[in-house]
Amino acid sequence: MVDLYQQGLRPLLFSVLRADPETVHRQLMRTCAQLDQRSHTRLTQELQKRLAATLGVQDPRLSQTLWGLSFANPMGLAAGFDKDGVATNIWPDFGFGFAEVGTVTFYAQSGNPRPRLFRLPQDQAALNRMGFNNQGAAQMAQRLKASQDRQTRTYPLGINLGKSKVTPLERAVEDYVGSFCLLQAWGDYFVVNVSSPNTPGLRTLQAVAQLEPILAGIQAENRNHKPILVKIAPDLAWEEIAAIVSLGKTHNLAGIIATNTTINRQGLKTQIIPATGNSPREEAGGISGVPVRSRATEVIRFIYQETQGQLPIIGVGGIFTAEDAWKN
Ligand SMILES: Cc1cc2nc3c(=O)[nH]c(=O)nc-3n(C[C@H](O)[C@H](O)[C@H](O)COP(=O)(O)O)c2cc1C
Image 1 (cartoon, rainbow, N blue to C red):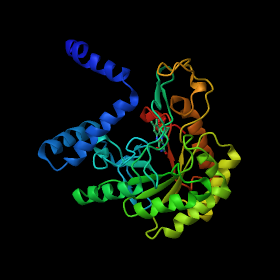
Image 2: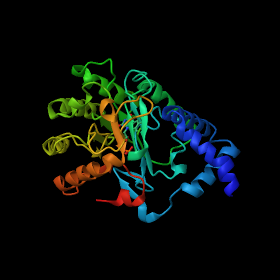
Image 3: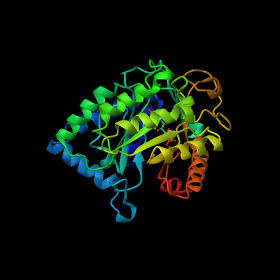
Image 4: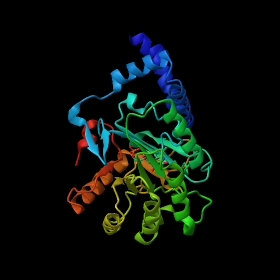
């Protein structure tokens, strides 16, 4: 066992840890997509069964019905991992009770120049400025349709919508509504992402005057009354969060996702990011992982109190263990 670890697994793990994190993510997604494509073959089905037996969670105490959807457990895959919805059939085998694909934008876009994703191991964190790299809403709609034709989905799938970089902020409504119209048949719930720090000006759309027409535009097209949520930044002030919550009442918001990555750099232990030679303070992007955890929990607590527990909240940020997820 020790030999296997020292001679096989350890060098492999270390080489993965040394490699560019985006390359590792891409390779992992390619494997997941291949598994997903072949989920009808006996070999893949056997592998999926084994994965599900090891990582899957089957406990009726963890299940719940929300928005008319059945969640087998409350742990979901956050947006940003399966940006193009290439592996939607396999996430429950990894133990997830739901998953959110995207962020998808109306127009396909390549995102920011690489490198744009950095590990901060001393902080158990990552810094990213991906910039919504994705293949666009029409491509995702086609892919999700094909995936549904292959296999009926057995869990709730969210689709996270963002604004295309080429679309000016004044035309954000058209962009979000355009993506929603293309995708509304293929998701169980939808997320208006106005909180990524990596699209210039996007977070200004969190202001009520900007957010209101986006929500109104989407709801006007929402033929099947799909749940619409808003994903917010941890860096908002309490009054701004309260304003979003109260706007939600007028526009039938189904919930809030709290939170996205933070632009706050306080308290980071990492001095220098080896890939750039700069300190995290000098690098644009959002921080995820442990540094965002306590602020995300505070924001969740605030929304819960503000709404007397009446508005569903999907909590995100620095969840490493079940205890982190339960913390309130
Ligand atoms: C590499 C990377 C890409 C991300 N991309 C998106 C995205 O496209 N849309 C989004 O809403 N959030 C995105 N996020 C934010 C996560 O969904 C999550 O809100 C944030 O990372 C905090 O959770 P965590 O600490 O569990 O990572 C991304 C995060 C990372 C690290």
